[in-house]
Amino acid sequence: MNYVLKLERYYPIQLTLRRSLDSLSANHNAHISSNPLIDLKKLDLNKNRLVGCDLYWDGFSNGLHLLTNLKELKLDDNNIGNTGCKALAKLLKKRRFPLKKLSLRQNSIDDECIFILTKALQKNKSLTTLDLYNNNITEVGWDYVSDLLCNKRGIEATHTSNHTLKSFGVADWSAAGSSPSPTEPASVTALLTMNKTAPSKTRAAKEKVWKTFFKANNNTFDMQPLLEDSVKIMPHILAYFAMRSSFPSEEIRFRKLYHVLRNWNVPALFDNSSPESERLGKKISALEEKNASMELLVKRLQAEKSQLKQENKVVVDELRGEIQGLKKEREEMEEVSDPRKSKKRKVSPNK
Image 1 (tube, one colour):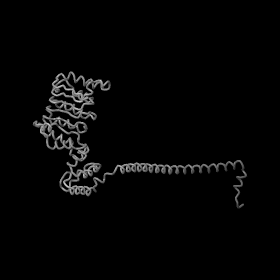
Image 2 (tube, rainbow, N blue to C red):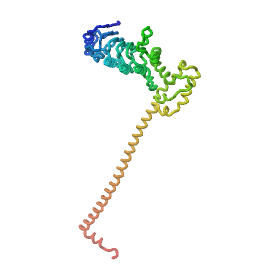
Image 3 (cartoon, one colour):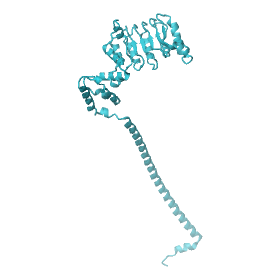
Image 4 (cartoon, one colour):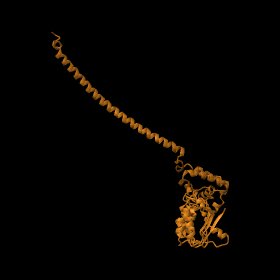
C-alpha cells in the first residue's frame, strides 16, 4: 500500500513527529514493525516552521533513516537553513536509504547549503529528484551542482560522477509556465538530460566522458587526459569509438581512432604493468629476497666452518704435544724400573 502522511501547517509537529521518530530511533531493534511510520512511502511536512521549533535535526535524520520504505520527502517552505541541510546531507549519505524524491522549495537555500548537499550526493545512488525551486542559488551554487553531475578533473572523476539525479525541479516549473527561480543553467539541464535519457548509468557516464574530453569535430584531440588517469580506463575509451552517433562522420571516427592508436606507444601507458606481471613481479621479488637471505646464511655458515677448522687445528696440535709429553714420561718411567734399558741406551755403537 502507498502510505502517505501529510502534516501541512501542523505547527505542533514537534510534539508528534519528533516523539514518533525518537521512539523509532530508540527502539529500532525491538518491535520495529509495530511502529505505524515504518511503512510510510511519502512524508509531507510542508510549511511547518521546522526552523526554530523544538525539533532536533540529528534525531530527525536518524529517525528518517529507519523509514526503509520512504520514497518521497517534502519539506517545502520551512526555512530549514544550514543546520537542516547538514542533517539531510547525513541522511543522503546513507547507502541503504531508499529516498527518490526530496522537495526543498522555498527554503532560502543558498550556495553554502548547495555545497553541503552536493557533497552528500556524490555517492548517492537512489535520489532522482531534488526540487530546489524558488531558492537563493547563484552561479557559484550551480557550479557545485555541475561538478556533482560531471566532475571534469579527469576521465575517472567524470566516470564516477553522479549519474542518478534527473531533476532539480527548476526546469520542470519553468516548463509548466512558472517563472524559473533560480534560473537553471543550460549546461546543468544538458547533464540532467543525459542522466534522464541514457538507458543506464554506465551509458550516461560514457556519454559524459566522451562529450567532455573527446567530442570535438577536429580530426585529432588531446591525449593528455588519457595520460593523467589510470590505464584501466583505456578499454572504456576504445569502447566509445563503437558509438557511431557520437561522430559527425565515419571518416572522423576512424581518424580519431587512428590518432589514439598511433599515440598509444607512450611511457605513461606502457609503463603501467598488467595485474599478471605485477603478481609475477611480486613473486620474483619475494624469491630474490629469499635467495639473498640464503646467501647470507651460507656465508655465515662458511665463516663458522673456517673458525671451527682453525679451532680444531689448535686442539689437534695441543693433543699432539700432550701425546709426545706422555711418551717421554713413559720412557723415563721405564728407565727407572729397568736400569738395563738405560745402560743399553748409553752404550755407544762404536764400542
